Length: 114
Length: 113
Image 1 (tube, rainbow over the protein chains, first blue to last red):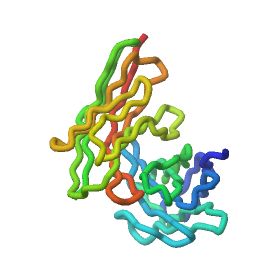
Image 2: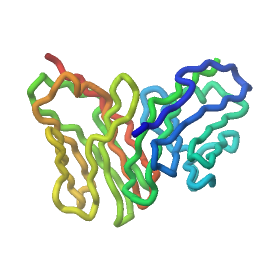
Image 3: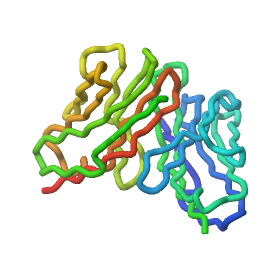
Image 4: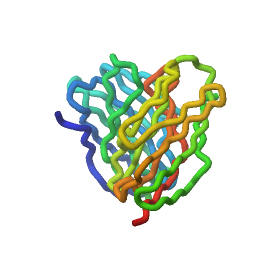
């Protein structure tokens, strides 16, 4: 069984640039969620994708957007980067049908905005 | 509002001893799940234990157990026979009728030899 994988693991951008982060869900999981974890904080929910549609969104501005593909992999896009966007971005997958709320996380992408 | 609060930023314990991490939450939902996740320095969040709100019996997973007090909205994690590999950030989280998790701010646990 393949777990959740994310790429890239680290990246550095400057203010105003755009970034795309990628995630492959665990096999058999059709739901992908993205979380932002600032340094020293708990993860904050960004949004969730189910069957290629956004299925819930946290308190993040529209410049945070996403996609889910037919193979259930997902992308997180952030436009017009700000310094406060520096964080660890975690992708998590789940088998929505179980509705247990248990998520399986990847190791994250560490974004630094200068 | 649905919240999760962890009031202990850091804890330490000696190897083989027992430690309890605290968590309180707030929700008006009747159907919810509570979790403890572990995030070691490698960063990957790992589920430690899960509790269904409708179950009165406290969940147990080997050395890990919870004390779930529904009326008090308290959900503490007890780690028995602590091991060096238990050193990590521990996050309490709640899932209130959705797959979205609401996390606390975490407790950094250091296990000393």
